[in-house]
Image 1 (cartoon, each protein chain N blue to C red):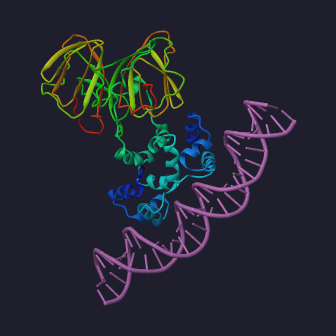
Image 2: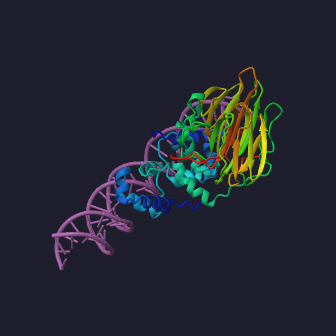
Image 3: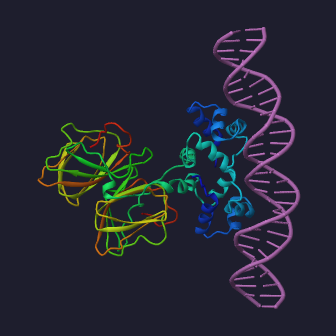
Length: 192
Length: 192
DNA sequence: CATCCTTGTTGAACATCCTTGACAGTATGA
DNA sequence: TCATACTGTCAAGGATGTTCAACAAGGATG
């Protein structure tokens, strides 16, 4: 259950910065009463108000809630999560067995000409980055599409929708690393 | 930048799941009007309402806002944009600026012939792994010494004492990743 | 064509959040 | 002791979010 203790969390953040309710309120452009009520969990603030307040700390909204969510959320690593690698066309080789206590996975990827991770932009928790070792590849992240060549690199939060496509005529080789994927919805193992 | 386009983002998520406003409203325990108004950005929802709705998708609040907030982060790095870290002898190029919030650091490393991380075995918290892209290198981990060649890879817990040495006569190129980021903050950095 | 279902939108009523302004408690210093 | 300045809390009312109910547009069925 929820137990989204917004008030307590806000109070902690404010106090850790040695700010009074009034001082924070002033910076945020709201009144001290607002902060008082929120901290007591007497109200559930509107997103716009909460954003004003967090901007003044400053703390991003996702950071604010990440702390809350990690407290009651368990993160599981499925044993078979990374076993499905490569689907005939694409070749993803995992460096080392994927073990529950590993904090990242390292891949040696080979994209033949025309290889494509698919039209459906994928989104999952975590971060990923890589260096183009040979060939070139077109990468789309959050609507931004670029063609990277040998020596180029990328790094992004995997929650942004992304897609990989080899539009050249030679094989593209990438060494990439991903920080832990969260559990994927449904059966298909998400990757990339 | 504000531009927190909560409505648009919600609409995207709802539609990607093939849900109508009414269906989502039903699952979330709010009314269809609420969702309509939010999606049109006619209102800034309260956190409690937004949480109900996101729970029904389901999407965590931090995920929801992550998409908005991460939109401005740099994703693509041209070869000459990598941050040089080398100390004269060794050359390490970091993918992306030193951002404190990243969960790993990605490196494009160049070891000239004779390069050596030193006799003192290094130990630090975290994990590291890499793929040898060109040349060869001698790696010692916890007393076990191996020479790896192009296409070989390694992965170990960084708490084990380790050392890298290029005993060949050509440059060795490695793409590696470390968790947690060992190059996160300024100052001298231990690595490898 | 009519009928029925679903879709998203909107005005008015209601519920909740937010501000105004006042209050009590504590600490510092004259 | 009194004055001043700070802290957090709270009631009343204005501002904003949410619901209820009606509406129009689009598809599907007969």
